[in-house]
Image 1 (cartoon, rainbow, N blue to C red):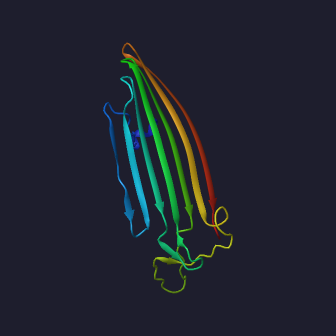
Image 2 (cartoon, rainbow, N blue to C red):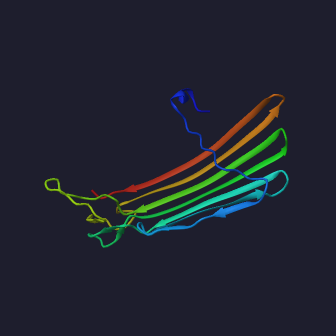
Length: 180
């Protein structure tokens, strides 16, 4: 359901669901410039003839790529964890129940702002100078987001019609702190 303004454009992103055969995969990469790794992976397939599951995860950890001359640390330090468990239960051709449970966490300590003079030309580099008088998180430069999301969709075919029920839950928590 995209609403009345879909003529202006809409993007529909559908995550992969359980597959009829066992599948899995993953990658891990390291970014030398940003000093961090990224590792997505998934596994899924049938549990029984009528029930299938899929688990997708992603881990991201970046140690910082901007040298903060005031604190001696590398900013920002970013950690991210994501997980999605999807199941599909289809006991007959006319009934299917699909559920998704998602968890996401983002934690960012240290800033990415760069300072420069307003009166003379500034040459930006991979260094910053931002004192952190309030100490580490939860008091210094930081932000974070934690989400829990659940959705269950039931489709039931009645003749040429399909009755659909979509039920969802979302919990969103955000923390934020910045030095001024």
